[in-house]
Image 1 (cartoon, one colour):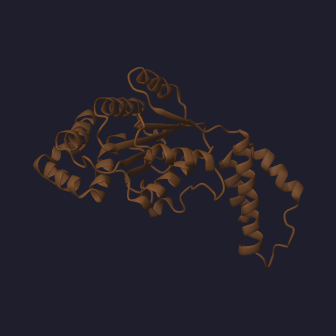
Image 2: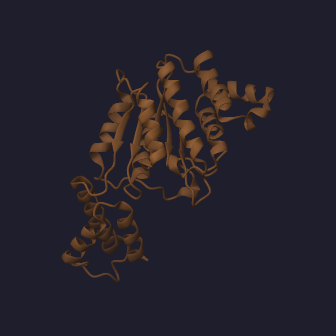
Image 3: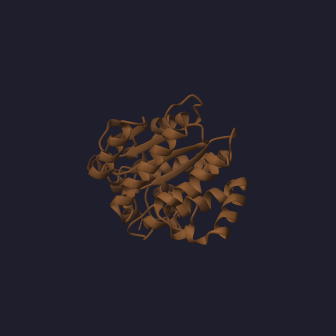
Length: 276
């Protein structure tokens, strides 16, 4: 499996999260969509440029589902940290599902004991054995609550063809089996091969989209709110003995917010540097 890629892994601490008071509207829409029992779309694609805070949005949603007992699996891919092995994606999903769904755990334990070669099977065969067979043929979780499966940073996986295959397998699955209690969230940059794959799949299955822009008014306001809150913590909580009141000057906060232009990654790195 892909180690240290889960929502609560210590290797990801502190994980990226939406700062209090930011990304309120998009978080509301995602939660409302997940709990809407009449929804047609069982897939949500969250996309946008690097550094806009997609992982923070997915992390925040994962925490919401975990608190409600509805998180089936969450995998946060990362190329720099080596959490991007395409061959281990479905094994990792299965592992997390087995931790949370007793009936699924019993199935998967028996399945792997009977055929351990499944660990090295093709992605298509793993999807059939680990997802289709238990949830469609064995009807694991039928009639119960929906479970969210969150895949963050799909473009970080090491093989582009596997990125496309994951999208294809999931869209075909939800199209053919709309009553299975699995809801999928995929986030990525809008890389051409991913965007084209989603566009092709849209012809046969409608999915929900959330675009996260860089410099929208909401993003710029959220970044400024994050900067002001972080400066307040630095001055009043972390270093009140060496940082004077009224620091930093208003004009410097405005300049930094303008420089960030709605890019959370910029603001986060700036705050880390200033804090250090």
